[in-house]
Length: 133
Image (tube, rainbow, N blue to C red):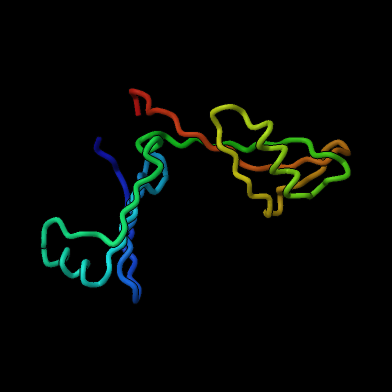
């Protein structure tokens, strides 16, 4: 699989952290930590340099297209603006295949429509690329 992506290299007193991000899915999928000695070895072209730590994750979604949409749902009258209640409700009613964003701290997270309280968030899912993409 050939990906378009980004790389981030961060240095601090403990060493170097390298992160790889897939452009299509907008997800990081690999993280490597090297101590200063390991980084110097790798930069001096020493093959098979050991890593202090190596992680891979999100592999199920790498290379897939990210879709997202706004999602609104009604809140109980007595729990308006309660973030924990909103999270609980959202996890129960989230459409299958979508991953909910459980963040309710933005200005538009809670609102009133037709005298009923609502909450708003974002849903995300990753889908296979079509032939045309």
